[in-house]
Amino acid sequence: MGEESKDEQISNTTTKVYTLAEIAEHKTTDSCWIVIHDKVYDVTKFLDEHPGGEEVLLEQAGMDTTESFEDVGHSTDAREMMTDYYLGELSEEDKKHTQDKGPKTWAYDNNSNQSAWKSWLVPVGLACLASIIYRMYALPQSS
Image 1 (cartoon, rainbow, N blue to C red):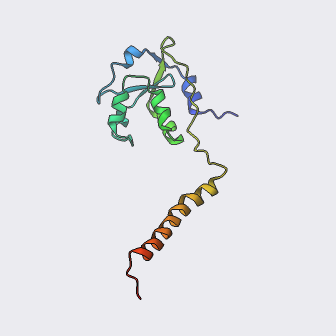
Image 2 (cartoon, rainbow, N blue to C red; image 1 turned 180 degrees about the horizontal axis):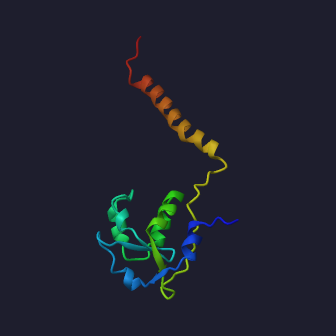
Image 3 (tube, one colour; image 1 turned 90 degrees about the vertical axis):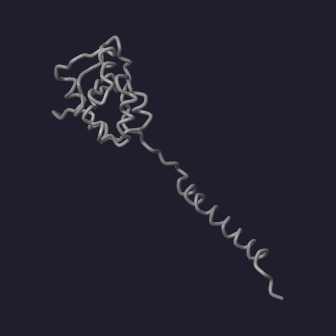
């Protein structure tokens, strides 16, 4: 009790509201804004640090990038870093009301042990078979 998430802390402070038209004016290396889950971020200072390169952010600059952000499956650390670049909220008429589902969980198949066996056993078996065939037909026979 008493501990708030960073998202709750952001929403409890007085927030500035931006329209998509305002955000669209910020799509250069000097001023790069994006929208993710109806929140506006100024990622200008992050351009050089972005693991995917600045081009990825500049392609999405001035727009709602929620879908692209979620498709990549950003980590918990990446999501926490976003609070450093938070500017405000998207205007009500421009909001899409998407929910942040958190980082993707890379589910493991119940048969992962079987899959692991198959992933190396089949190539090894084929290599052995190829070796036997090679020895039978390609090497000179001694009589």
